[in-house]
Length: 183
Image (cartoon, rainbow, N blue to C red; front, side):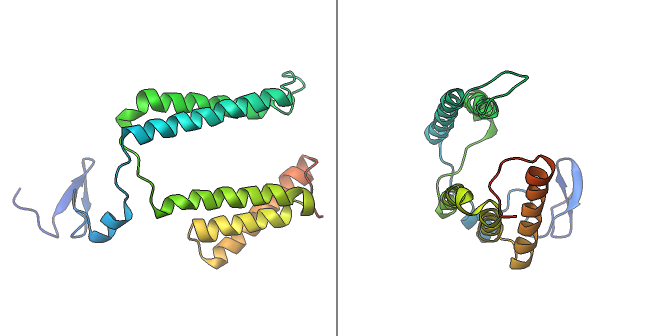
């Protein structure tokens, strides 16, 4: 093997693949370097794991307060408890063995998008009992797909309508749940 040129094959995970110039293993373009935030460091990773574990513990306490019921007659808190326990277990696993997986990213301007997602989710929760789930769910889905996911208007509107239609069919039509709805 001689020196690599733009047209040479580059081994990627043991398989030969054509890689365009500037994208060879280890080469970053200026555009890629600007998009990737620097690593957060081990203290930030530990803080994130402990924060999610604390959220899981709080969720478990709230779930128990709702009532667990029995396996034959599950109460309102059974599934929230299961999810909360999973969050705590995964958070603690991340503390113990997650350090081998690399370093997380520092907060950047893209990190604020998670707060936008949370705010719109809280808006859904606030509007749900007032006007039903159809309109808030449609708005939430459009905002998440268009502004957080970067989809085109066409696909954001189409898929949002499909998502709400499927949710309606499952929860109102098939399961007959007591979800507030317009139709």
